[in-house]
Image (cartoon, rainbow over all chains, first blue to last red):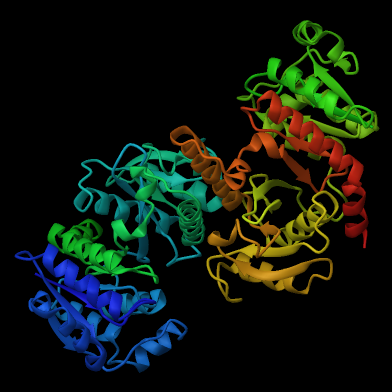
Length: 314
Length: 314
């Protein structure tokens, strides 16, 4: 099995990417090979610094880089030899089993849609994010930003996609799916939320437990939290900022709050596409890069994308 | 000046309400009188327990109570002698200058709309909530739940209402108004957010600073954060739950996180109605009730509702 990494993606690339890739290569030794994609003159010297520890890594050159400020669709089309475009081509052709990048979220989404493409039957892929649970482990919530504007049918599918991920990657036998709302009662919320509630309620593929509220994100009511990409993005960034404020001001030893740290959890998978792609945090450290690559391996190993294809075929 | 309290509202009423009212009466001595509204047989004995400390309070009997589970509009119409209905009648007739309740949010909103009514020109009143700022003081965000479904013009007005509150009650000379979005760039977000951005940008009554993100809620980018009632409600309940988790697990001495405690901040004002009404948290303690009554006094003293009327007249 091969897990690819965009060596040029992230605020501290290529250094953090290469360091994280070497860490991951050690963790995944005997299970998967890490494939680094990036500019040869930038990446090779960094790999050499690691000496024998970097021997197991594969390197694939890509001459171009998509910068954070560039227009995602334009940059993706114009820079066909960028690390992101090369990564998606390898993913699509089956040369690698997962592709991870801490680079441009927009370009990663564009690549997902244009290259590996959405699973037939999936209206719009979504980005999922881990949420630490008070009583241990993680749940996920989605969408966190791929789709600001949603239709009821999209929210229904987010429930299905998230449920499959929770089941096959997180190992939760019967994931509880909740709809983020402003009240628990069935009739609550916008027309979108009311209609999505009705669709989720009768969907045979999921265990829908009804509406949940903002205060329920971290408790055990739901393993999978469904929301539109605007609301999910606001929730995600707000939670991250509270964690940042907390660790800046206090020394807290607490397994729950430590799980807010994106470094341990890995990145945000794009769900509903024909392959395994993960978007990392822009400020990814080597630890975060390593977690993302391990997560990429777990996704590939679980066969989640085949499960998604099988579910949406029917 | 007279500040009225629904003595029957809140999970710990009437005990917590009466105790909080007595505290507030001491704080507001010489400035305002606290008026308790509720069932005589329940409230009188509690007042007597306080002895001379309760002498300055006025008591107005109301024979009925609107329970938390009741349908707000039906209950409000059928229970014309409920503490909430009596409170709004006194507010509307000018017998009191502000009305506070930790009871049914729905009934408080219904009363606001049917009794004191929306200010002419205001499409939909909103509920605002305080947000602690990292560098001291508070900002506000709105709507936090009165309007799940919003139109661009409503979000624009929330910006105006919030700005007036920040200016006249919080004392911020030129409040910075930000639109909660999933990216800072002008074209980001849903059609609703894009249209609201354009309206806010040219509104002459406010100082609009553009889009902000979930991570900016607690920093100094904006004093007033505009969002729909669904998103605001999710943000509010999520922040409350993180605070609850934090204090349950850790002893934290931190003026920033302490301001997450609703007890210190008071309640959530309904903005855009012809008078001063505040909704308290259901679990309000005597301290929280006292803060809400002091906030009611500050609202009345500031003349905020006249400022709102003047702004929307033009």
